Figure (cartoon, rainbow, N blue to C red):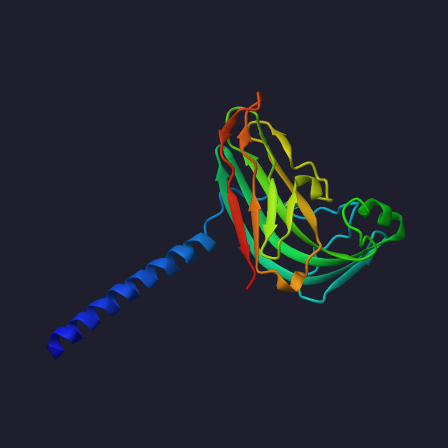
Length: 218
């Protein structure tokens, strides 16, 4: 009887270990997926008239200040996640949370995005999109952005305005940055879910359903 119980215990342990390794392997594979395409080097970072260039902000607490205002890096998730949405390949790279004190001449601009326009936090990331198909398509890289803190933002909440939503010609690649004001406490941020729109043809018909990219803060 003891031998039988021991045998059953060993069998269960082996099965559980195998399942655990499989799940870990699947997660690791998802997080370290090979790039679907190369993000053009010269446009990975581009200065934006709405905010200072944050390219050199790599460590929490790093700051930069220019004529647009002052940025302080609060958190950063170094990553490069790819998704295929029909014929469109898309990447989201390096998600940051930044505290921003815009210059006086930009305060009115941000009044449309927040009531705390003189100082606020926002989430920002780089997006790259490539149409690999043979026909023009339309896509919004961020149809909805949701966080575990209750934020639910849409494409119109992006204040970087780098023309990432719209029509993509066959073979066209576009790279830019997107920024969304956070009204909730950024320190409670654990999960960010980015949902794309469907891929549409020139008549507005759906060619492929949108995809999701989930960002987890460690």
